[in-house]
Length: 83
Image (tube, rainbow, N blue to C red; front, side):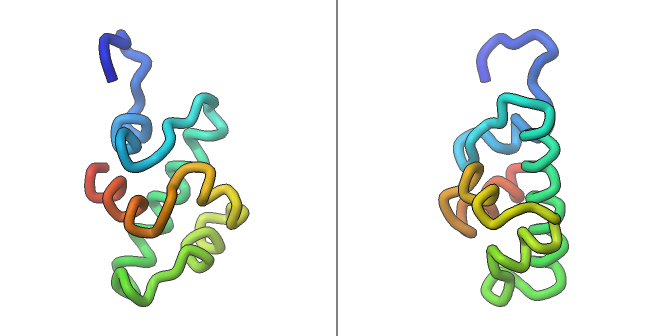
């Protein structure tokens, strides 16, 4: 992330590389919701049975919002592991 004195958040740090870093507080909240929902879905259903639509539904965000931050379910999983 470079030398950003106190501006990096845990969500932004987790997103590095596998997700687009949100620029706004609202975006950071959306990303956090997606990561939390993914953790629950993967925990309950496993990676293969969890779907992007079930994750976004659980997060309470639009399906398109998922693709604003992640290219794929794999990218989301990698960001979640990094988190």
